[in-house]
Length: 247
Image 1 (cartoon, one colour):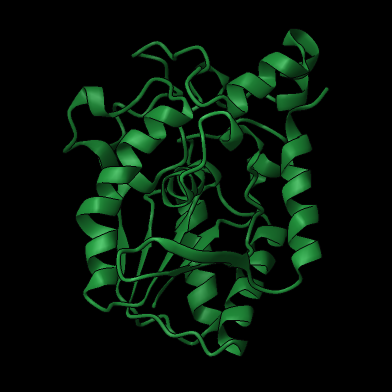
Image 2: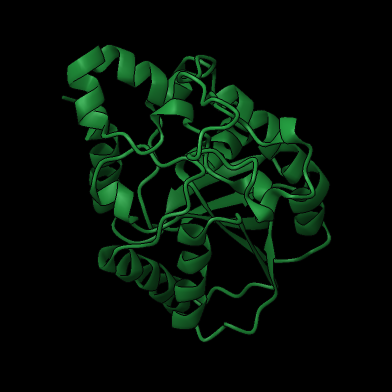
């Protein structure tokens, strides 16, 4: 049996301000740092060991991983950063307040933008300063690979190659891996691994800073999935995420 640990980054400054973040590179709050360290504490207390860690190229995920590994006294582990593990791109919504958008467009429309599988938010203009096509961390990518908006279907389409080309082979080779990423890149993996339908994925919310564990069989099919720590606390944290987009 293989095991895989997934951690959504701790609370960011824009989580706190209830803003759509996407590919905007914002830091953790003090609460987010504490969540990341608590994740590391849970993993250390559980005797977890890893050979390599993976994260996105956004600092809220990178710093979550750093604080987690620091709490485990494992800062020396190799860390691989992959842009394909980035959060879903929220297009022209990036930087806007979720509750304000719900008041303007209605809870249902904002839920569609936040959670619909195949309906993206309005796209950014290619020259919008909120975009990332001039960001040096994406300089080696073709312009079309740097999105102007994404729905979850688009996120799945870029996360799955990372799974198939990098993550799954690492697990099958015997490497013990931990991934610190984002609500939607983790939802993309969960959708794929658990075979969740396009309709049902709308209801899945990932709490910040709580390690999610997959136990996988020889073919990397899930045996079970669970959160470390207090299950009730994880459920409450997921419910809080669900309520972010309401007026």
